[in-house]
Length: 125
Image 1 (tube, helix red, strand yellow):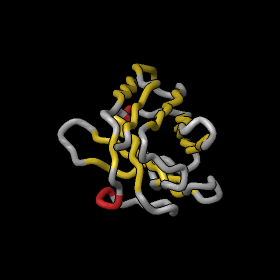
Image 2: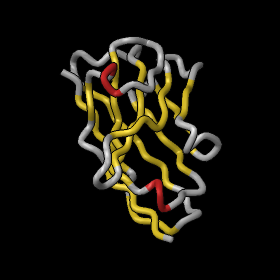
Image 3: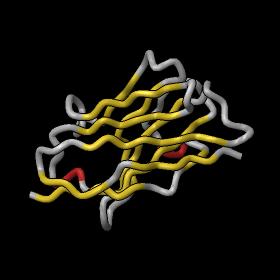
């Protein structure tokens, strides 16, 4: 089994920054897994935010966060972070960390096998 635990959420004003972290653990966790961040706003479906391959050489982002968010990972610590700058009210959502069996990043929710419980990010204007 693989456990993913997100942290770092909170309530901030527009323009502020937050850094989310996801800690992975479990006997079957493999550092060769690609990792991703998704978010779900109230009353909406879960949307792709960013993803990173196992070696951190390849990253992909949703257009809505490109240039503001940065995904990174530390395979020695089994963590993946999401640095969020210039936050906007429309970034308000529950943010989820996810892991997929393949080594390459993906923007498709169905390709991820393991999910965390989520962390709330609220951005006020």
